[in-house]
Image (cartoon, rainbow, N blue to C red):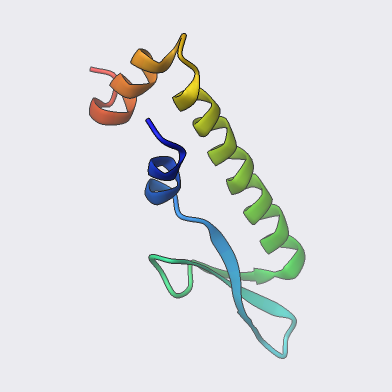
Length: 78
């Protein structure tokens, strides 16, 4: 498993635009706008997503647990 495969499956979020009301649009490479929230909420959402993907990457690259991770990744752990 390579890190890029996790990133491709769970694309990064980024702030795409803002409004006069102080809201920002959060987008991904797959979706123009995922959600419109405050800048503070967007920052929390983006950091949380990045933390989750970092954990998945660590699991994917952990040789001791890689077989189990791949089983879950490809067939839902069946």
